[in-house]
Image 1 (tube, rainbow, N blue to C red):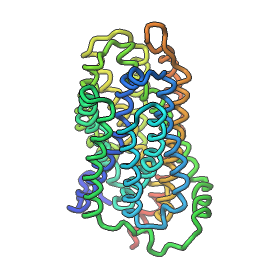
Image 2: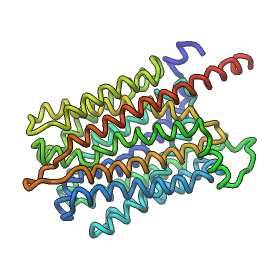
Image 3: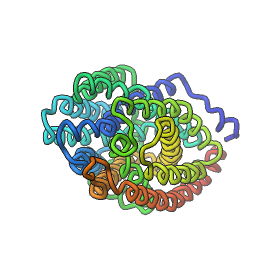
Image 4: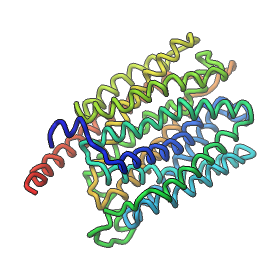
Length: 419
């Protein structure tokens, strides 16, 4: 494959449609999860709960997603991925609707479990579809576009959700997500083609046997471990970021949406660029660069006190860019690890360990931090040090993933040339 093919990939019209559709679907999943962070300050006040209880709301999604992903892994490669997508998306819509009508803390906790049960599996199906339809050489760029769903959720979704939450109550953002999900689901049903290439020539296996076989392969275990520490680094701080900005840094709840908007606008431009750079200079190299920047930003942000708004906007945008620089290349690398016949199961297990690792991290974060008499969060700096430790471990784990993918790619190139 020539360099021009790598730097200037040509997507068919249908591939462009799939990128847009998967990005929109990913946007709804991400928005449903990410809206919990900026709603954190509201929910802690309105429901009269502690930061630890809010951590359970976040973790409930993660734990149920992790368990469901493992349960679904054995079946993930037995069906057309489009049918799997529609089934789990319907369940995700139901869970989000339950969040939108939750009358109290305990009902919300149950609703988040239902949402996570289906939402966690959806992410793995999306990644399997991307890996099925796009070669590794351009997958970083595809991930870059899909990653824009994070940016759009911050530019439009989170601020709009917070606005309606302040105007009409905290239930409204979830009901808005349900409406968007229904439109997306209709588009998937109507225009997405079957994704069943993995079924051709596949030897039938029992679901449990397929799960055990996939989970026990050493080359897959390293990828799973790297995902655990990748998610740990994100889940430790993110659920409590809005509460920290409001209570410790002095950002008002009314101005808080602007912090997410500015970072999201930057992400609209940096996401595709990071995806392109990861294909050009190397996914692991870019991941290291993003991890270094993230480490610096964590040290700075976790030690903030009352800070001018412009400085908060700059720091939060840099932090978001660092996170994006880690997520895009790492997801592209991990997606190249499994064989096509194992891809669905691998992605389901990988999504599960990501959610379980994140859930444990959220609980750990809720246990480490507390509130003082003035309502400020304390020990947030300790949370930052633990996050940096997760960054460093992930760099080491992803080194082995990158080495395996490099060897795998090197072996496949002569075969392709011979063909």
